[in-house]
Image 1 (cartoon, rainbow, N blue to C red):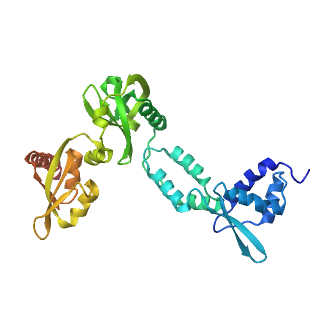
Image 2: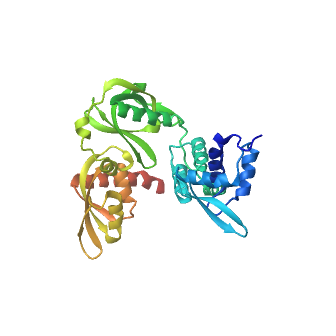
Length: 334
């Protein structure tokens, strides 16, 4: 075969060899590259490879050489993703409840293509968490795609919505009837994806967990609620709707130990929390939140170091919830 055989494939294979078999800790010699190319029936000469590597750098593949003994070892010095970035993505995939075990494995395998075979081994060692709660719903990816398409085309979406019953089965709400909503945003909150949209029948903004949606399709009806979403603050909505359960938004005042001030700032935002000194050890903290049992439960979990003092209606809600819990458990203790 002539020396210049399969030249159209040479740059492709050279890039593949360098990206898969080298990194900052592992290099390869020109001699080894020539042998691998020859194994793939691609002719090349030593001098031409230096020119080819310069051409590859024009595509963003930065290659460096380092002399060791009498040989130069070449490696890819800069990639689309650093190993640390890939590890972050692997962690995000592993910890995401909506991504199934099967899809997690598929995505991580794809991420391995962005690093060398040696770094891919490090990524696999990174995947050590087992038994995390994962959704069983493989169709969620199609649902997310359908929602984005409806938002892009400015059309309402219809779907069925369910919840888990005592048989651990997804039971459809509204007797299996379709919901028809104008989707405006998707948000990742508390390890779940939610669609936020406008319910024209109820004339209000609502949110739905995507993994509980099924039989989804776009409609011919144009979206409604544009005025409400013109200045819609997604982060603020998510923050106030703790755990994404429904509740009435109110300004809460509470007295808390000074040690908890940072907890409330982290939860509700620096700009949205007002802090005033109460005494040397306590502060009065104010913020807005949708009040529901999840919010009250979060306050109770602070182990008595925070006490709601206003408004009176919320104080009463907290008292009622405490009494209900007391009656529920005191009978067990007796």
